[in-house]
Amino acid sequence: MTQIVIPKGSKVCKTNSDSVGRYGGTPRFSDLKDWLSNLVVMFEAEQYGGKDHNRECVLHLLSFQTGEAKKWYHRHMVNINCRQPDWTFKQVILGLYD
Image (cartoon, rainbow, N blue to C red; front, side):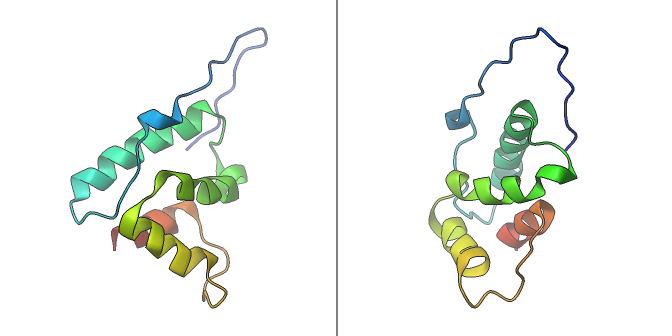
């Protein structure tokens, strides 16, 4: 993701996070791909692009998960016994798919 530079004087519309949907951890790659595409576009529009906002993107992921994906996130990201304290957005997405 890259950060978008908005010209001065431009009005920025708030994106609709409901349009992203929630990923439940289905084994179908196409489900993950569709959800991730919507999520990345929303993050870019909300100015969460670039490496400077990696942590925010990782934290916001929980709002867009349900079912097994949400359980995985809690087990690996929030649990006090988690082995990896600093996940990148890419690592979380790959972990969700695995």
